[in-house]
Each structure stands twice: as C-alpha cells, then as structure tokens.
Image 1: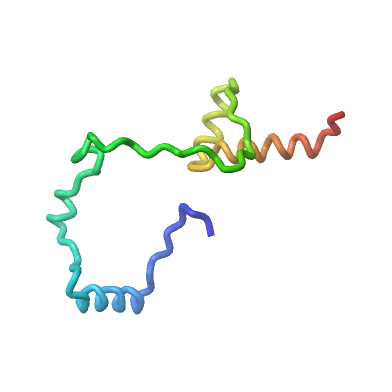
Image 2: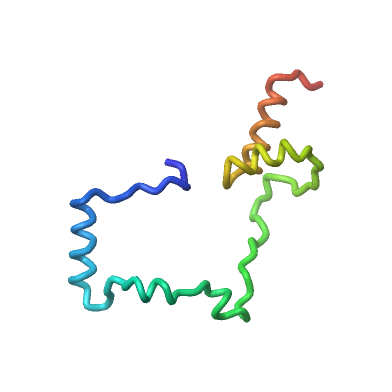
Length: 101
C-alpha cells in the first residue's frame, strides 16, 4: 500500500471506533469548534526548533547538487511526495539499459 492512500473505515468499523471513543473515560470526540480553534505547533510555540534528520548510520546515497531542466523537475514534482526517489529510479533504469564501461 502506498503511504499517500487513505483507506476509510467501513460503516461497521466506524461504529466500533465511535463506541470505543464513547466508552473511554480519558478521551472524547472533538467538536467542530475545537477543530476550528486548532493551530500548528509551530504557530503556538515558535520557540520549538524544527526537527531535522540526523546523520544516517550507514549512508547509502550521496548528497549532490544537480541542475535539471524545469520541465523535468515539474514532471517529477507533479507526481507528489517521493519525486527525488523516482528520479533516482529513472537514472537507475537508464544505467541498466545502457552498457556503461
């Protein structure tokens, strides 16, 4: 399953979820008003630093800067999250289809 696909619960699953929420004394279902009042943590607590990825234990890729035509970038970015991985896969396929000495 792709990460970006949301699988909605069936009506029966949804009823069980709501029953579990109602039965739990430590939680409740939020109201529309409560959802409307929510703000991103970065807005409420700007002093909390953004998370950055730490060093890889065993780097398997090399960080590089590469200049590509705008139409190539637009094509891959339009396909959503993971576009850099898809560029890597396209280059890997190119290598497989060309005998490089």
